[in-house]
Image 1 (tube, rainbow, N blue to C red):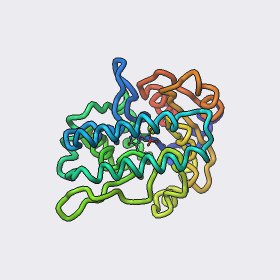
Image 2 (cartoon, rainbow, N blue to C red):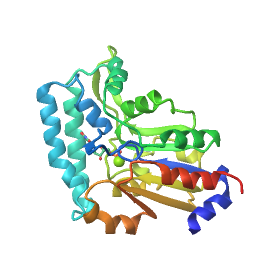
Image 3 (cartoon, protein in one colour):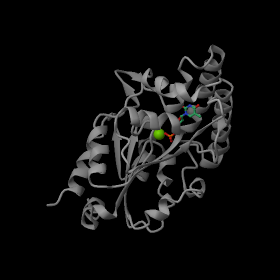
Length: 271
Ligand code: TMP
Ligand code: MG
């Protein structure tokens, strides 16, 4: 394929990887059961009351079908996503969640990174290729997941929704700007210098599982080659056409990072 060849020819010093987290680096399912998103990890944990759990589940059942509905436009979805995230964050902020409990909440959860995550993170670290994780999930949770997996290397940068704790370490709210599925673009990156520092990294491998992930590289000033790899996890038949139009490679029912690792191995090794 032309793009992969160009990325290889440009070399590893020109490459960066931009990835979504939930259901892209983490698994969608295991043995027929759904795996949790970073939000779900909190929702399902012992620190959220039974009433809180029910309300958060009701929100998920109402808004998630809207999030993945191929018939609705972005204009329709955006305000509804802001509504979902705001309501979920308000509910979580009422639960007196302690910063000191996050590590245990994560270690007791059912979260799983996709098979092959070690090779992905370790290869990128070995060749000093920046990995930018751009997530509409919860930053504190996803950072803890990759820390506990021993892959939070110095080449990893995260932009996400972070919790704001008071002086006693109790969650009081989330810091802005709010990142939801469909505003993952330059508008929420304005306060961050990350892309400016990386303006020479003009080859991009983008990993996502949502149509909203396609704009994650918009803030990079002068993209020369971009390879978009999409995990199509849910509503496969209904969404296949749109995914094939938008992504260069579409992976169905694949809980591994094998394809990504194979491409990286080819791009990063000298031949
Ligand atoms: P992302 O994978 O694009 O970063 O988006 C995060 C996912 O989190 C998205 O698919 C919706 C999901 N989500 C929950 O599971 N529970 C919630 O309360 C919210 C607000 C989002
Ligand atoms: Mg995702």
